[in-house]
Length: 109
Length: 116
Image (tube, rainbow over all chains, first blue to last red; front, side):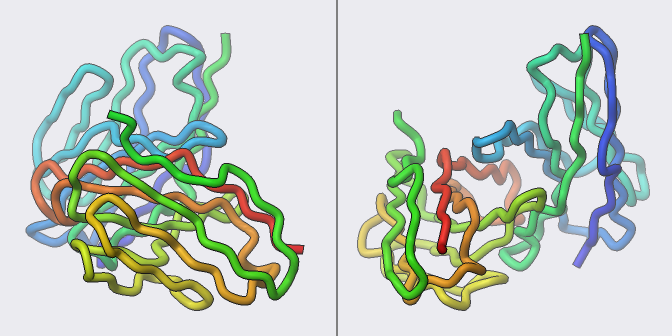
């Protein structure tokens, strides 16, 4: 099972780009990398999923190098409302559906 | 679509009491899940279901039971509540199984349970 490691917390200011990196050294060939966002007192919300290279949607980009041992979630021009916990998951089956502590992103004015 | 709904939002139980947490989804998803989230921690999988009539244990199933009689509903039963079950419980559903391309879970708003 691919264990993930990500920073406990990060600080940023409004308008900046934020990059959160997750390491997953034991990722398997068929594993996908998925990121979720959780606001206080809410359930997690899917942000983005990728397998390799770069994936972009309307809220974020996900960069995955060729060896796939890490991934970086990029949030362009963050606002105060992006303050949340961000979880990186490597999903390959039901036994991998464990959310770690995630990264607490605090965006300041 | 309402998505995933959970009731109640809050509940206080005494030790030894029982209760059922309700979860309903209107997206016709086959896959449903129950998680618990302890303060300051991530989410741990309690039980999951791959369709009506089929359930299986997750990482932390002890002290809980589930049933899945319909596609829409996936109730979680707590028998003989203990203080260790104080937590926030999230129900989720997905169209595809974990590991599939485009795998995405949709979460409910949670039930905050306190056992004293």
